[in-house]
Image (cartoon, rainbow, N blue to C red; front, side):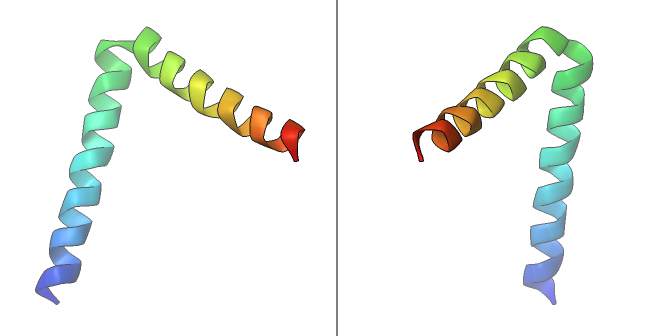
Length: 47
């Protein structure tokens, strides 16, 4: 029970961090999303 609670807390903290990053630095946030999407595309094209 305690472990699950700490996992949820960690996820919530990470989500809040991402949301803050999106609000403070939308360009950096978009660059991260763009890089992730491009990596996925390259992986799909290669296979």
